[in-house]
Image (cartoon, helix red, strand yellow):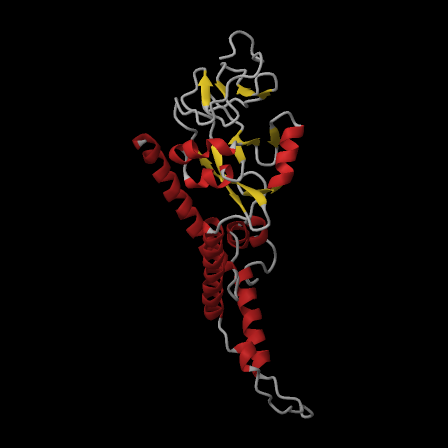
Length: 290
């Protein structure tokens, strides 16, 4: 790092000197009299072929010619007179709004305006980030339809109804099991169970596989590692740490079943079996059905 700086600093200094010399020469070149180059001055003063010519000694140099031209222009400007027929127009004051803003004021106001726009955009982005997004489908409240229609659809689907928009299995919950359910489940779960329905999250709480239903056993059976659950999602076997997770549920004033997919509730602990449902046939995974 030190070696690089020791090389870079002299280079920067030399470049700055070159820039300053170039600027000074440019300023002299733009002067009224101009500036003769080194080669021109050498030709005017030192070349033998010019000096040896007749009358070359009395010839003016290029610098003297330029100076004489400047003096002539100055004298010509002093001799100028106003034309006799020149007419004067009445002076009209300029519009203050057009000329009343200096360049400094314009830049300051532009800077303030741009800062205002930037802060406004940043504030709007913050509000949009904090404001709850308007979402539909999974993550929002899903209206699954009327309770009676859902029960009819469940019976027509061999006891299991899948809703892809909610990523949920909907099953019937027996009214006879409600006394036990009231001691094991929370109010958001009981709101749907008291209406005779239950919405279960499709994922297995073991490692997240999608749990299918088994028509023959009338249980949920995970094909990944063999976890089994009854129709209420209560664990009946396998390595899962708890029963199937479920969503908060409610029934609105129109008798429609609402699945609140934005609220996932952990499944019941191992040992909870409110329905007492046993497998009604062979397991879809093979082997023992319990």
